[in-house]
Length: 99
Image 1 (cartoon, rainbow, N blue to C red):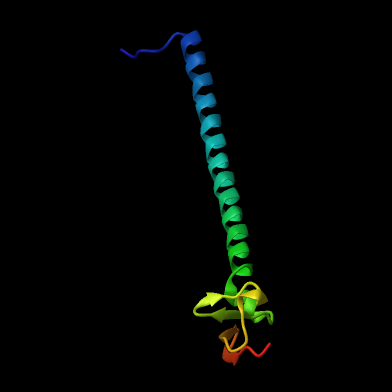
Image 2: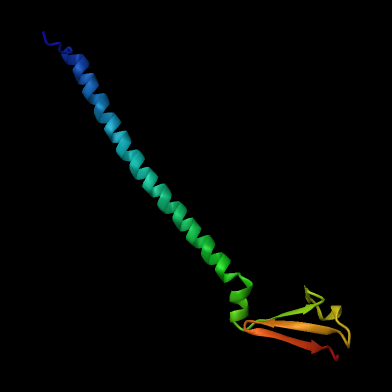
C-alpha cells in the first residue's frame, strides 16, 4: 500500500521547498558578496598602511632626524653641538648642529 499526501498538503510542501531553495540561493549570493566586500576593505587598509609606512615615506625623499633615539619635531629641541642622526631611505647620516 502506497501512501500519498493530500493535494493541498503536497502543494504546501512544494511551495515551502521552493522557498527554501530560493533562500539557500540568496544566502550563498549574500555570503559571496560579503566576502568580496570584506576583501575590498582589507585591500584599502593594506594600501593605507603601505602608503603611510615610514619606509614608503622615506623612499619619497623625506628623512627623519633623531636626537637620542627620538624623532626631532622642532628645531627648538636642538642646540648647537647636539649630535643628531638623519635616517634616509638608504642609510643614516650623523651630524652636529651648528646653528
